[in-house]
Length: 170
Image (cartoon, helix red, strand yellow):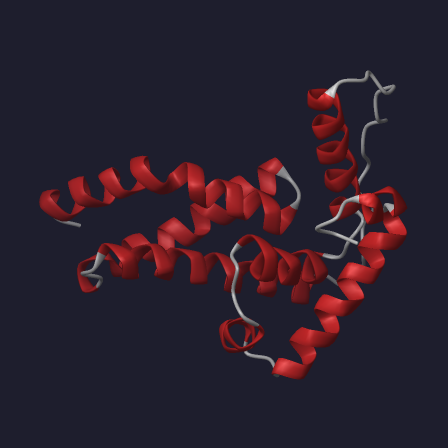
């Protein structure tokens, strides 16, 4: 990579890596796996940097590389592994404590989902993609996306029944 492109790539990484990491963390549920996912996607992007012109297209390319890499990872997995989570703290009262408790419950519940289920929910509700966009992005049918999202939400409700009290969720 020539110096001009390298400086531009470095600037992109500095500006967008935090947002990319947040998405990767939601996809993987694990900090180290998220770091690996971002690094892998950025390595693919660096190799194609010269051909990518538009800043919006660059971020889209990186995100798409992350999604595809994550899908490849869960397809390669031959068995489901359990993720240990910490115990929730005692209720402390106050609005801030309620928000923190909700986040901890949601995090633990998401950790109990399969990587594919977590991916579907992240793409639909965090990235706000339509079912059609998700299907195109992951190379599956729209019906598969719908059924996976439905099953994922049902499993999330079973994993954390206390979330059904939250208006946006239940």
